[in-house]
Image (cartoon, rainbow, N blue to C red; front, side, top):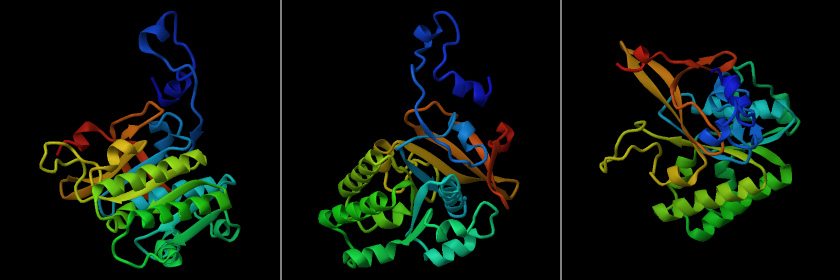
Length: 277
């Protein structure tokens, strides 16, 4: 059964009695089509609208390119999008992404792609201290939400949420921040990618439990988790992407080879012999 069959069967019975046995959903949830080659097939049609995703990955695994292509493809379809850059200046980010054919600077000029420096946002809010309080966190959530409302943003990226969370002093405040941000943006119909920097994908951190995030608190409260990493095969690092979790849709949980091409991200099935090394 192909990926297109999987999409079709979300709202279509497969035969007498099959719905009762397999619990086929009675409706097909609206999707945010990413436009990233291979990703919408993995997600059986795209990301459910209003979802908040954690996109975690190691250094150089393709996180920023994937996220930028996600918002640029939305802008190309006439959507208002926003990208908050916390790890590098927006000027440098845009200069780096101009090498890809999917990017068009006219989208920035027309206000369809809005790129913000997180440091500028901090200064605007008066958040110049090293550690944030709960009031600071609430002010930041409100500022991001106000931008979403004012511009009418439907696709949002924060790159990276790890850098932001380092300013939040404890796990409970991080949970509160991410939960409140995700819930608030979802009510506005905004589909959000939160980029996370992780040093080792899926490795156990002492408690025998595999973690897919920086702080270990993001996983349960966010709607989806995608991880990007590297596989060492005969001395060559192969990039891969794996969808660990996605509420509201069936999806593949296999690893897919991720290639950065001049046209952007390309995801292709990864043979098992290419994984077990």
